[in-house]
Amino acid sequence: MSTVLLRQVPVASPVHSLWAGTKMIGAFVISLLLMFWPSWTVLGAMVIFLVAIGLVARLPLGTLPRLPWWFWAALALGGLMNLPVGGAAVLRYAQVVVFGLILVAASFLIAWTTPMGDIAPALAKLGAPLRRLRIPVDEWAVVVALMLRGLPLLLEEIRVLRAARRLRPKDTLIDRAADNPLIDILTAAMAVATRRATELGEAITARGGTGMLTAHPSSPTRRDAFALGLVVLVCAGSVGLDLLI
Image (cartoon, rainbow, N blue to C red; front, side, top):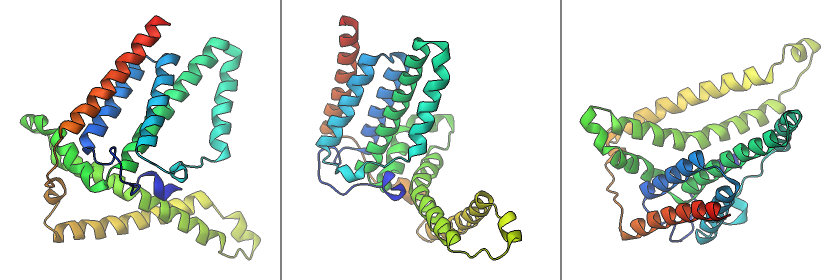
């Protein structure tokens, strides 16, 4: 599951062909709307809109992550903790949870429909006006792109380390008493991440440096303008519907 969350699903669809910056701007507009107008009507409209985007993108059902039981148990526990305060507190908590899940779903949609190689050029192009303020836009774009690319690899390494640790024999009671799975896995994961970072840095240097990661030509088209207009139209329509109700 972890290796799929931040990887593109190779399906031909209109959503996949959009510019990466368009998708990020759309997600930003949705987050701003939900931040200032988090009503149930708007939340429901955004859920329907994201589901529609997933259908247009032709994402298979197997793409959806299977969240563990403790995740849903933690959400239920949070609702129970707000229950003594009153029903209004529980509803507000539910709104916050739905708001967070919508933002996570929008982020996953970007990852599932966008090649990781297009993220850094799009970020560099969107942040181009900040170069006048001497802000290292290209370096920040490279850091974000490498982080998104390396996170699935790190999660996969942690899964392998956990599986290998379960196979390690524990002969004596002293070994079992001194056993600390969290510390062992984190230490090994840090060592693996350091080794991978060194190898990745050497590979980037051998291929011309970090500037090559943001030099890929990318720009919006008329299709991207239509997509952004559709996002703004849906957001405005959801607010208007909420006012009417």
